[in-house]
Amino acid sequence: MNLPVVHIVILNWNGLDNTLECLASIRELTYPNLRIQVVDNASKNNEAAIIEKKFPEINVLKQKENLGFCGGCNVGMNYALSEGADFVMLLNNDTLLSPNLIETLVEAYGTLENPGAVSPIIFKYPETEKIWFSIARWEAKWKTGEARFRLALDENYDSLKNKKPYETEFACGCCLFVSAEVINQIGLFDERYFAFFDEAEWCVRMSRQGYTSYIIPSAFMYHKVGGSTPSLVSTYLLNRNRLLWAAENLSFGQKIKSYPVMAKEFVWHLLNSRNFISKSKRYVDKDCSRAFLQGYKDYFLGRLGKWGKETEKVIFKK
Image (tube, rainbow, N blue to C red):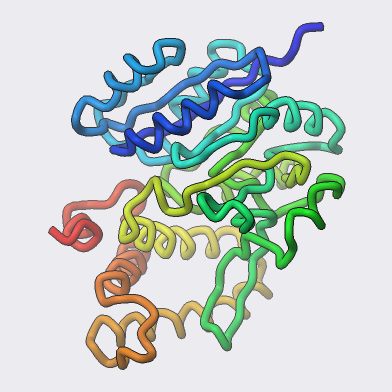
């Protein structure tokens, strides 16, 4: 029996140590029909060449500029499809995999009804007993001032591991497993996002074509949360792209609940950036608030995709 060909696509952007550790864990996978692509997003210090030298069995796709998560994944997916992939797994470079992850996902995928993208349970690392991702569910809470996706249920793994696969609003881009058939039907990532909320938009597109996103609780892996992207860059992109995603994908009822919460959050960050929030009530510093506000500014000015020079000064503190 011929096993499906699975291509793993990993992005590297100035994250050599994490990427090498991730690739070492991939070497321990027990699934025999794997192909590995590392898309290097124009990293500094000759990182692509170092990866090639240490892992000669993989393909390193060198880019001349930082294409972001969306653009880099699109390069990797296009390559995988051209090479005859049956499945593609998008994987963050700051992850570590359980040895039987791939066969568990392949086997489960074949049992699902109209599967689109799927993800395993994702634990934090090194706090390996703490679940980071087990669901994607949009929530808007006025009291806490948060309108966002909830990424985990208040459950331990013992209560989840024997459950059947269950639906989620999106599969997580940290580890997203999808068939070539679905990619060909839906298309690639929307590069307006650059990074963050891209997989949420992708899975919405899948759902509109009749596909369902799932969590496979019998499969698991580990994630060094925040290890792949500088914190101010994440803050900026998350909040810019949340506005884009919400405008195009929330229902009217969800917008009625969510937009006042977002406005409340905006006011808090505006006040914090101007030193009107006392230290005792400040949960992030002024640099974080400035990155948040820059995300709002760029969204309303229509500046999507990769950030410009003005934004670069804010998110890299130049």
